[in-house]
Amino acid sequence: MQLYYTKSSPYANCVRMVISEVGIESNVELKEVHPFDNVSDFLAVSPLGKVPCLVDSGEVILDSEVICDYLDANFTGGTLFNPIYADWRLKTFYSVCSGLIDTCVARRIEQVRENEGLKSAFWWERYNQAIERTLIDIEQRLSLLPEDFSILHINILSCLAYLDFRHSDIQWRQHWGELAEFFAEQSQRKCFQENPLIG
Image (tube, rainbow, N blue to C red; front, side, top):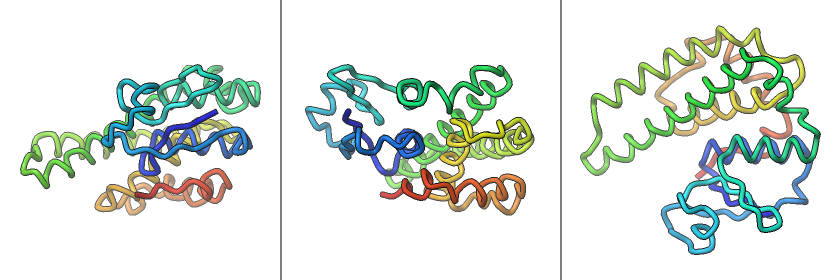
């Protein structure tokens, strides 16, 4: 299998953590790409030009959630995802965390646009408010987490790590103590330690 990824992508970070958690590092060839470089072999399998992208025996699998689900189903029988599928509240929790990642990425784009004089004050404030509301919501949902480590744990870890990585001005630990405790404990896990967000 080949995984096209970028070290700075929170979406690819989720996939890399799943690969590590499942213990299939030797099965996956990591192919680091920068989507804006328009590398031909990458665009041939990922026409949207987005990472992550998994290729398994010629079959292309796109979208981080789909890739994570595919790897989990094929190598563990669904250990990471089954608790989510069994409870609609956890499905919603997972979607909230995924939405937070999307919003944080959008906020990052506004940061980049600022260098071009194109930053939108309207969208910047909207993203800030959405992030604050969603962090409150996630902290309130922590009691729903499955006892065993799951894809939901991975999603939350990736959210918070991306905030540290790209949005250090949002000092979330100062305002959300339970999230800070969760992160301090869960970030010691091998799958997280071996897959930092860098770039």
